[in-house]
Every structure is written in C-alpha cells, then in structure tokens.
View 1 (cartoon, helix red, strand yellow):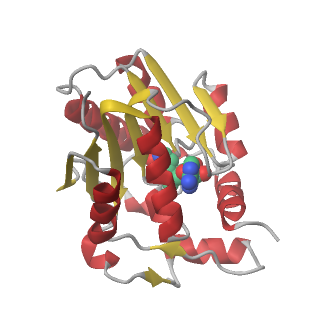
View 2: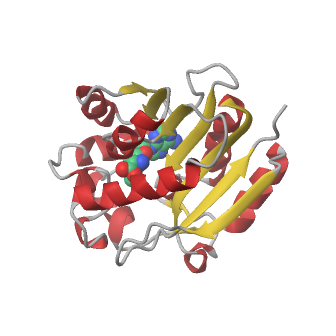
Amino acid sequence: MKSKMDQLGLHFDLLARSEDPIVANGYGKSSTGLSADGAYSMIAERLIEYLSPLEDIDRLLEVGCGTGEILCRLAAEFRHAKGLDISPKMVERAQSRGLDVSHYDGTLFPFESSTFSVILIYQVLVNAPTIKRVGQLISEAWRCLEPGGVIYLGALPHPKWSTFPEHRSRRGLRARLASQFAGGALTCYSISWKDLLSIADRLGAIECHVFRSPISLEGWSSKYDFVLRKKAN
Ligand SMILES: C[S@@+](CC[C@H](N)C(=O)[O-])C[C@H]1O[C@@H](n2cnc3c(N)ncnc32)[C@H](O)[C@@H]1O
C-alpha cells in the first residue's frame, strides 16, 4: 500500500497534466478570479515586496514549488534559487522551464544544514496529511535555514476553518483526493495558529508572526501567512 506522501505525490502528478498552471498547482480554477499569469505575478510581487527589505538574503529554496510559477518569478532576485517537490511530474515541468528543482520523498531535504537564507513553503501545509508531517516539514526547513534566515509559510487557511483538529470535507480538494484514490480518502490536517506557534517555540524561532496575506485572491480561503525567523549568529 502506498504511503500518504506517495498518494499525495500521485495526486499532484495527476494535476500536473493540466495546461493551466492554476489548475495544475491545485488551486481550483474558480478560486482566484484572475488569469494564471495575473495571480502568480501578484503573488510574486507581494513576496518580493515583503522579502526585499531583509538583509543578506541571497539563497532561496521553495519547498513544494509545483510547476515553478512562483520560483521562476522570484529566481532573478536571488543569487541561488532552488525548488523541491514530492511530485515527479511537477519536478519535470519545473525543470523543463530551466529551474533548479529536485524530487524528494517528503522526509529529509537533500541539502546541508544552514544552506538557505529564505525558505518559501507556499500553499503546501494545507495538504499535509497529519500534524506530524507539518512538524517534520518545518523542522527540515529550519535545519536547512541559515542563522538570520526566514521561513515564509504562505497561503494558510482562515483560522476560523482551522479550529477542527482534523476534518474530512466532502467538497474541494479532499473530495478529489478521495475520488482519485479508490483505496481510501486522503485527509488533510487542518493546521491552527496554536500548532504553528508551538512548532516555532520548539524550534526556538526568535521572531514569528502571522499576518493577513497581502495577496488577496477573490474567493480564496487561504489568506494568511506566517513567518519564522532564526536567530542570527
Ligand atoms: C498546491 S501546490 C502549490 C505549488 C506552488 N507552491 C504554488 O503555489 O503554485 C502544492 C505542491 O506542494 C507539493 N507538496 C506537497 N507536500 C509536500 C511536501 N511535504 N514537500 C514538498 N512538496 C510537497 C505538491 O506535490 C505540489 O506540487
């Protein structure tokens, strides 16, 4: 039987067949009200606006980069820009546009400790199957983050929707996951701020804040961002 991470990778392999980057990256066409280029340009502009004032940030990693829409728009701002994803098809698509993206199995990142100054995890935690996976992902990002660096967790659901520890939804992504894997529905853990704060606390983040995302896509529920900063040496 396939692990939950393999199933999730397969789900995104199937989505990656779509020509439309919004659909391929699992956003659901109707949720943005913008063209793919319009939506991603807005996301990238706002991220650059947020990150630009930070000092000494020249090495970016995007975990869960999908087809590379955000990464390709941010890459020029960094000396090095890399991506990681659990879906081989997503990795192929991102590589075909010249991006430095690798596949991994969802456990350990294939990088030395303290390699990156910014680690972006955008619209990924919303699909994590369990809180344990959320913790593992953030811990790995923390290990690979250099002192003074930031982890930017983007596009988290509205806290009102995160009060249930775990849930099965009959609509949206969870229903699609269920229909594609007859062997059983993949449920996603619904993360809360309390979870994120306790992870940040355990890791010893010197600064963490949550804010309403400056990126406002019409009808989109994932409107909150969370940033963790590591103490500089
Ligand atoms: C909703 S898509 C978002 C893609 C991209 N960040 C964007 O916003 O366009 C989520 C992506 O994260 C990948 N993914 C899910 N869980 C992951 C994990 N634990 N580590 C790395 N990639 C993951 C999926 O394969 C998929 O490509």
